[in-house]
Image (cartoon, rainbow, N blue to C red; front, side, top):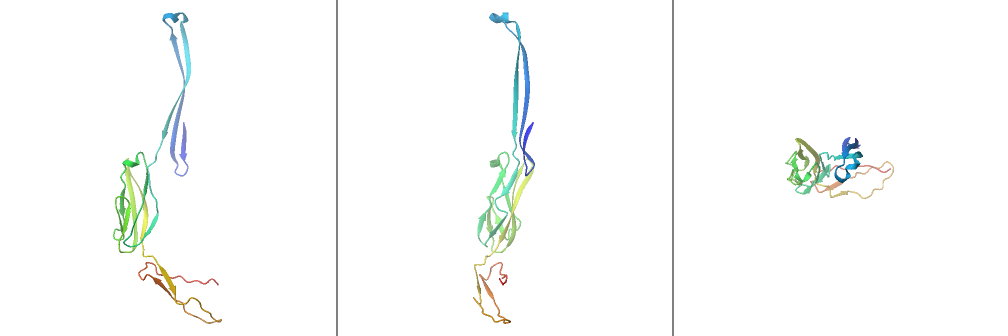
Length: 181
């Protein structure tokens, strides 16, 4: 018996069974060859059976996705099983007030910002296989303006800097400040 194993998942991918045999038969000649009498005929025979295994699984093309409110995007589900074309993928959203998903994996963001988990699943031979993608509905920052482009300060002097983030409804408006020296 020979087999191949996927080292990442420890799953058998191919199994090959080889059966070697020696076949012998006693042949009795008749008719015009009757004078040959009985003879033993032997030969070696090797029989190989090979089985390839497909392990069911489902994986999405993205682990996370960021969408703006009222926009859409899509996820692709890759199936591995005996005949993936016969499988039906079910889609769901953990918070439909943030985003919904249709039967083909298209995601539609609501007006509200937030986070939801999109799940794709299918059932094969009585077991359910699934994968998820975290979807963030966010209003992106388009620009940021500072109140000063430069400041010349003497030792010990201070100045105050401020930053204005646009648009005003951007989801993340926090500005982090740092100095290179």
